[in-house]
Image 1 (tube, rainbow, N blue to C red):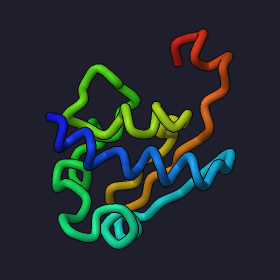
Image 2: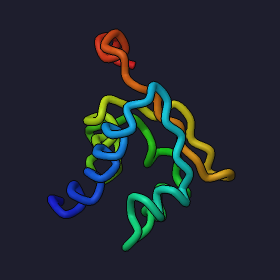
Image 3: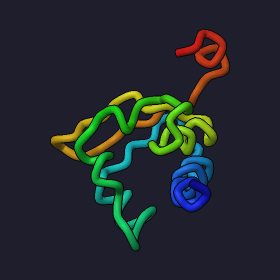
Image 4: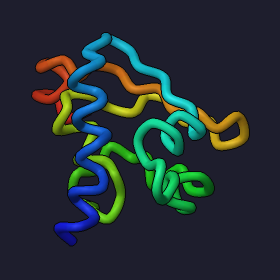
Length: 96
């Protein structure tokens, strides 16, 4: 699991550096910028559940964007992009 966790840490680093209130990434950007050796996992390309904001499933990438202070607000599997919004503390407190 440590290898997998390390793999997704690149998402955390990218989002922290970007620091925008909203960040949109295409699957191609994930492949080229973040995972040039392996590409985005196949499950991420075909299952919306992979993008769920659920830190209890470390096999998915959620903890990577949650650790960076973001949440996924939109996934389009057909057009292959994901939209992240910066988490607000009030959202955390409300559990959304």
